[in-house]
Image 1 (cartoon, rainbow, N blue to C red):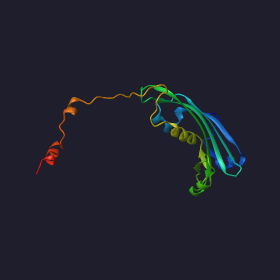
Image 2: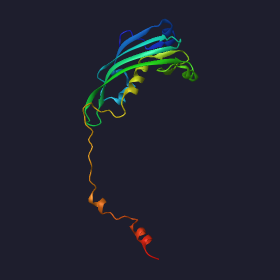
Image 3: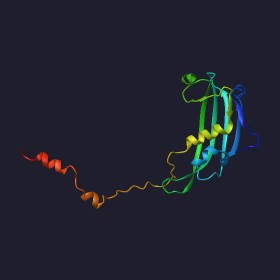
Image 4: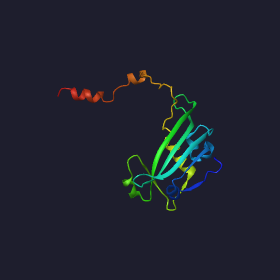
Length: 170
């Protein structure tokens, strides 16, 4: 982790001062992300910039750059999945404030004390960036038509007897 990276940030003070933090954190420090990764080798680089836009909406602009070691579900090989996130989060105090956010803002419901976990924010975005089914670029989908087995072809239709009864003259 970066040497002087604060663990907690007072978001409202950061917005008022239009300040930001930059840092680097090892993947090993992101414990909630471990379940999605093959291993925890590598670093995550990020920048968190606070401010207000022209409409005086407080925001947090987050930039994250990482390469996540994932397991390809086609080839079962380790590969590095590049992640580059640029996200603008509108800081809101109540859920009702979400409707007033301008287009392009994602809502971030602030805790009452206004304190945010620096690494927690980055980890949340990385978890959202992991694909549901990771596949290494360049691997082909293995599609194949499987012929029906002989047992399936020869199986007797259970409704064949009903068909015979239906077509029987009265």
